[in-house]
View 1 (cartoon, one colour):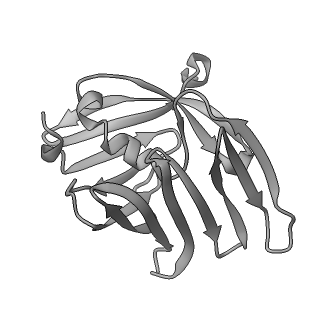
View 2 (view 1 turned 90 degrees about the vertical axis):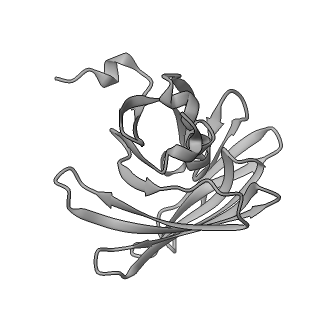
Amino acid sequence: MGVARLKRFILGGALLAALLCHDPLQAQAQIFTGRAVDEAGVLAYVEKHAITYKDGRVVGSRTTYFDPDDHVIGTLESEYAPMPRLSTYSFRDLRKGYTDGVRVEPGRLCMFRKRSLEAEEEIACRPRQGLQIAGQGFHHFIVNRLDAIAEGEVFHVELALPFRLDQARFRIRRHHMEGDCLRIRLEIDNGWSRIKP
């Protein structure tokens, strides 16, 4: 199955559930919208993405978050160097004055957060090793591996979690296919944590 046939995919799991529409064109700019819903199917927020490319390679993106009444509630600015899965980014929750993000530095990832406008910035750095993913790099990691995931390959990744000033191990795998829709699961990579009571 070619990537071009996968026009829509669902990222689902304990932490993430959103329907995204993706058309993998080698354009200089790409704009798309995602809608996040809760378990009851009620709209929680809308995210509008604008991604910029240079020579077919992602270089930056801006995501703007809207509440169900179409008010801006947050922003996410990302730069993708040295690779698409590792983005230096800053997220801002405009409702609470909260900020967090990741700075990709030579040999390490530095996660930061500010709990409010008045708070001091907290920082924790981890060495760059293994298959680490930061911020919107998650989206690009998935898009670049749709064929492999559709065919059943499982990826084990370290996802940077700046709100916790830490990273955690997750696995990404195929859940099932519905026509050209691929449902993907993001799960904590710990068997005990996945056991349902």
